[in-house]
Amino acid sequence: MKTKNGFMRRKLGTQEVIVAVGEASKQFSGIIRLNETGAFLWDKLAEGNMTEEKLVDALLSEYDVAREVAEQDVARFVKTVRDEGMLDD
Image 1 (cartoon, rainbow, N blue to C red):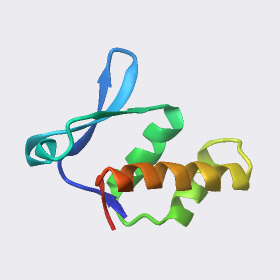
Image 2: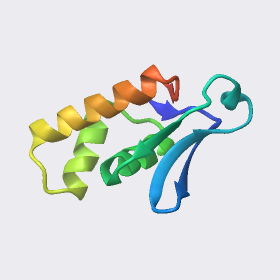
Image 3: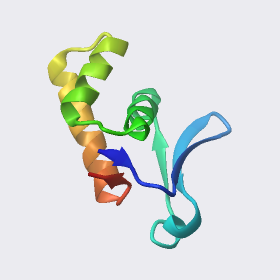
Image 4: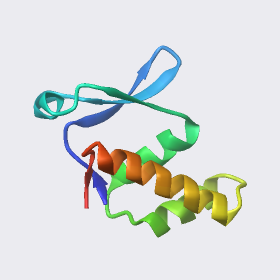
């Protein structure tokens, strides 16, 4: 998995968000707000060649969280950005 071209992480005041730019903004005109974990996962997805398992492992390396919680967080985040058309599989 990798983030699609045309979606970028930006800081609006104190809030981290994902916005569409260029052609992508014709199909997605909203904003997705990110918490610290979401921003971390987005950055990992932007690196490319990610799987849910790799994202879980990265989360476990960065944060003190149980594997089950990390798996749920990753699954929920990936579903959200996939449903919004922000991922290339």
